[in-house]
Amino acid sequence: MQERALKLVARHLPAVGDAVRKELSLSAALLSPVHRTTAAEVFGDLPDQQSASEPYEELLPPAPALRRLESVPATLPELVEEVAVLARSASQEITSFERALDGLVRHARTDRSALADALREALAGQWWLDDGQLPYVQRWLTSDAGIELVVAVLLGRVPVRAVQDGRAAWTGTGTCVHAALDGVMKARLWEAADAVLSGGVPFLLAVPTWHTGSLDPAVLVDRLHAYKQLGIRPGEADFAQALLRVRRDGQHEATAAAGLLGTPEGDLLAAWLRADEPVAPVYRFDLERQRSSSGGWAQQPTDWTRRVLVATEERPFIQQEFPRSFHWLGHPRVPHRLCCHWGESPWPWTATLPEDGETLAAWLLPNLATCAIDEIRGTAEPLTTLVELGGPAGEAIHLAVAYAMGARYPEDRLSAVDALLTLAAQHRLDAALLGRELAILLEHNLVKPNRLADSARTAAATGAYRTVLSVLTGVLPGLLAHKKGPRGLSDLLSVTAECVEHCGPVGAEPISGLAETAARGGSSQLVRQAVRLRTAWEQGPGPR
Image (cartoon, rainbow, N blue to C red; front, side, top):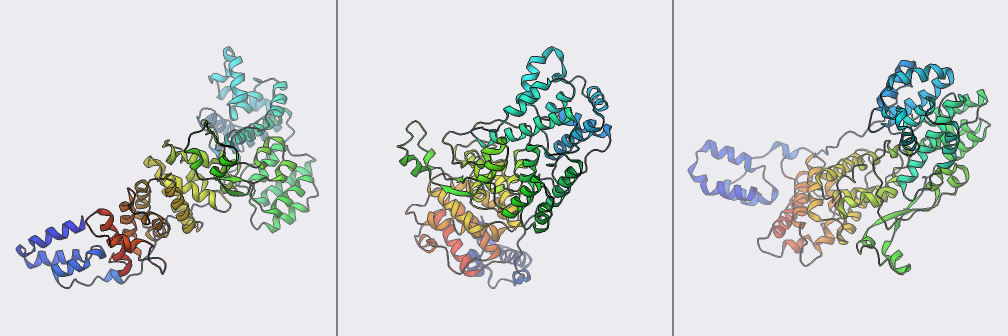
């Protein structure tokens, strides 16, 4: 468009006066570097632009800040109101859910009868309190309910024997990560339901400190000390969830304090903090090699083995020290050749592993990748939450972002852009790694260049030109090596050129294959954009 506008202005320039000519000359100085020579031929010497000497400044969003949870509802009316809101909601947001669950345990210990009466009145009319549907209600409570399960137990809607059976039955032995995390939550719910019946638990250990689900280790030490003073042993599922949520990096004081508690739980917490290891280490998994070594999967779609995924190693500590409901997390996991079709959950799974975003990304990757490979809408939605979780951002998270940048639907690509910018703002983005992952996906035809270009253009338009350029410089050499440029390559070159025009080139070496593509000649968009990028790379950023 700039090129055509310049030609049109040049054709009619002799017919305008000095004032219009001066105004056009000022505008021409803002054109892309590739048009500077032509603009100078049309207007003569272009006016100096003061802004051209200003250093480029990368614009990134503020890194997400941890927000502390509000304290547990202190009064009975406050708690009942919060539980009623949750019971009427389709999803159970982590902060409200955890505060309400802890509040039920606390108030059931002090005055269970008053709590039950208040809840019965506030929840009148709820379908799961209808006696006429009791058999169906009991099946629903034991399979799909959230905090309603604990409330129903408190109100006598679930037999005591069923509570004991429920605690024994939920062992988290699902075949996918969704089923496993669902089992962890169910184990916690049954344990909390038992606690409201017995009144033997003063409060829950696993209540998060921050909105992500993370827990301050010093707070957990204080809670364990209070349990010790009362002579109470923590619930297995509650304590195991607390360990998964506790922040592990550099917690030397909390580690020492935990070891001084002199309890089995204190010793376990100290060992967990001292190890400072992910729940399950991540490594690259070669599906094609697995297919060959297993004799082939003739019944599977041929594109399955082309998928680039990751796997996780065994974590014996979890299998040895955690309750059965958590053992799935400690077993070695490789991507399953059958896609998981788990539906919506009433609670956020990410809050189960708030300090292990990389591990969780590895387990969710087979589903998340379908946004690009199988063109399924909405599967990249968890990405923005994943990048806010604690722990390092490694291969799994970067690969997840790469897939989402090539998603079929714009809303999934926007999730990728948000994740990319968040990682950059947190200083956790490895641009070279993301570029390599994208190059691999493009090589396997798992991501389309035009969709990637749309994501890159959207991210760059926020002001993150250098961030996007640092990623794309690792993507382009493989595409430029083709004798016939793949469809959408010109779009990627255009975005890259725009980035260079704003922030200048990155690295000392030019992009491999760019000069050869620009020298092909002709008027195709591929050649035009290659010439534009080469010129911008050689001349540096233009006025802004």
